[in-house]
Image (cartoon, rainbow, N blue to C red; front, side, top):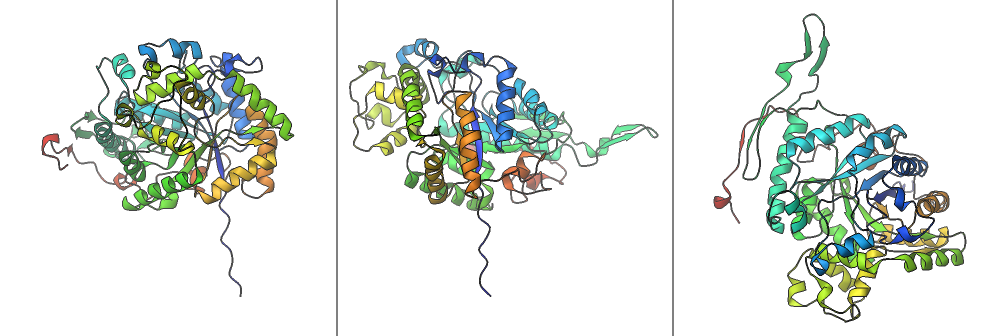
Length: 484
């Protein structure tokens, strides 16, 4: 008998958005009269987005979020406000229940900061989201960076990069105890005689004495459909990849070449193995900004219109905030070197590496940097017919060993409508994208992992190992005696 080929891996898609004017990956598109960007302070936009996503069988809508205001470029926030970037923002958590009520299967991943939300508050908030969405909630773990958010929270500055990840490890340990240990299965009784709403023997106090976090109390929210919401992360540094390998179930990434993305994918999966996990349980999603038309000419006309609307000054504001380097010291069209000593030691190094990968010998100017950051970022930007765009996506999907894409848009409703009505039918025709959710009406984890009937953390995940064991007090090793 001949061998049977294994089933083909299905591509999954997420939509990335935020709650400010336009999109942080499409800065300045609010200028387009066709854009809905100026109306993102009303529920109508978000309900429309959720319903369109579900029509296209999108796995989840991911909300990027941050605190503070970008104030690095020029030492003030002028470029941020004039470009319409990361300002006039809403809290995405507030929007999710309305989006979930209008849909059945699409899920919602929201960014939460381990630096500025206490573990107790975050555990309660995301458990609440998981309850009201019937298990369709995800937590995108960020450690946050920069002085502006720190000062908004009453601090002088953020912790150093590696220190933030040490604190985040402790943070996650406490979260797992609140989500997985505080309440046993079956604690909810609803017994009238004898009177017992919840069995106190099945609800456990958590005692936690860490170097960064201290807690004494109970998880306030009873177990949600997933217990621990599905976990996402986007770290590209050595510490970030190690953290992702241990905790993340989904990874958001943006690498400008297939070779670079394949290398990143390999490093993440190796990190998962080192943490004792199945490498296939970590799903990688590359950013992509498809620009579609029924003809190639139509797509190129859209590309030209979007490019003309791009705010390079808004893009510069973003670049400088992410890296901590103020490029206003250069003339807008003055070339500079990414290997400059100040740049080489600053901020998020993955951003510099991406610029070096895009065109190794290119002389970058501040204007060009701003345009690149503000016009789609570092992932692929295929422009063309559904067939042409699908060719690009299939190549990246297969050769980079990823699990799907984060769909970035330029101008809604046009961009998402094009994706749902033009691109997705072509992907389905090729047999690389599902025609329905793995578990219609199921949890985010069931659909992400294609595990019907398994809404909880996988058994090899560090958080799952706490479930079913009575909690014991946690006391951290003092920082000054920890091994380096």
